[in-house]
Image (cartoon, rainbow, N blue to C red; front, side, top):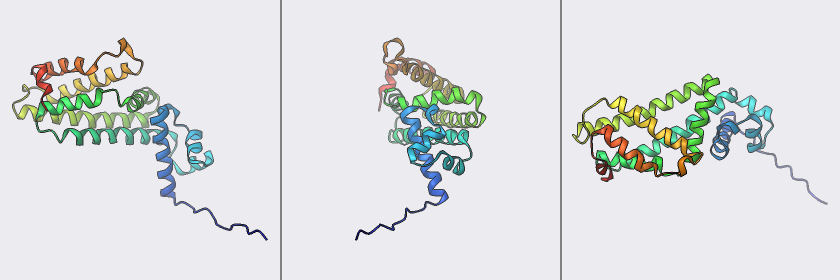
Length: 208
């Protein structure tokens, strides 16, 4: 006589389910882009009905915005921790440029680029994009100010320089997504521009 298993699937708490759905949204964004984060895609990744995703989230716009914010804030924390291990102000900037422009972060770059586009018609996402850009700018400004205080960089407007740096890095990384201009060495291009902004010789950025 065969026995039928009476084991029941463990029911997840609302918080567990929300965490699961959020993780799925992040995975899809990294693998396929932010525009691939749809109700059906998230439901399929988790193995539930689309209605369950709708039930446990505050709407797809919020889910997309949260996925974007989690991914880019994690990158900021990672980069900040990496450069913190370097004492020299110029070396910290150089390592930051190497890290952000070495071609290994195209997945996050695509998330950024799509967030700028999608955010034009989705205010929840736009607000999160602005907040994350502000966080990156503040981090860069603090690094520039640190170098100015140490006498390594010429004294100037650290906030404005940080916005300039952010624009250069974001622009070149966005260009790289379509292999523009045969994929030049973006780090070499940026070092010359950044050195000019900081009032130092380009070779100075090679100090670690």
